[in-house]
Length: 320
Image 1 (cartoon, one colour):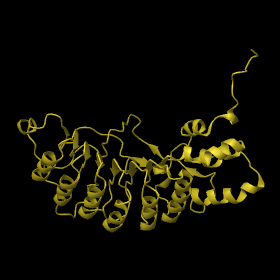
Image 2 (cartoon, helix red, strand yellow; image 1 turned 90 degrees about the horizontal axis):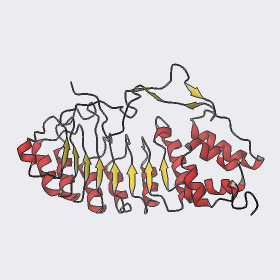
Image 3 (tube, helix red, strand yellow; image 1 turned 120 degrees about the vertical axis):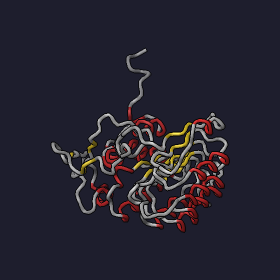
Image 4 (cartoon, helix red, strand yellow; image 1 turned 180 degrees about the horizontal axis):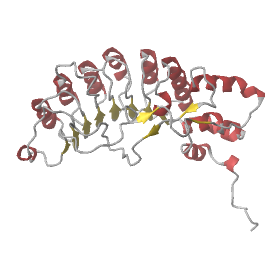
């Protein structure tokens, strides 16, 4: 047998294998570098295997709504109906959310932190997102009881809900007990529920514990009106309750514990492989998407101060 006879060239790998490899690259590299390496890589990068899971949370922070809309339309179209996970921050256009729902029949996980969508938009979209098992509506101040009820009534397989709030944004609300009761009434299959800093009282939490019989994790950190003693919780031995006291401090996922620019290197320049002239129009479009009129070689980097941070679902610092 000749040496290397069993080896396969990189450009001959199957598209699904290439898709798995490209998941380890950044969004910028998959969109701009990979397609210009060779034709087979270009086909893989524009095909569904690379876009069954889309995470543009970092990229979408502080982007103009129209740029987020254009990027999502580009990437979701590439998924060809196979999109299973989507994460985007700061979604503010109803038309973008409805586009997601129109093409989200295969969606299982939807994370929309810090988005400005409202109850009406959620009500319209929920019927087309029936397969969801995980939803993150953290810091979505315009979503309330009606939106949560719509999700609960349509997404019958929902097992995880993340609804963490910003303490300063809910300070003017009298209560969010109606939201907690809506969760209890419409989401009986929940296993994980994170509602840190929501304005709820003990009675609402007891209702959740009573109705959501599959519950395994309940995060009520910062819910200062909730009082659950050990004797009572013995009635729910399978439930791990975290809070209401906040006894640990992790990175805050981009709210206050980060800076727009690093002291040593605020920007990282990307060196791209030049493509054919036919790619110029495509490249111009990506340049527009990547920055609000800024060239793609100026990619803003975010640096977090807490190098020991662990993503454990805790978003806020130690309680005062």
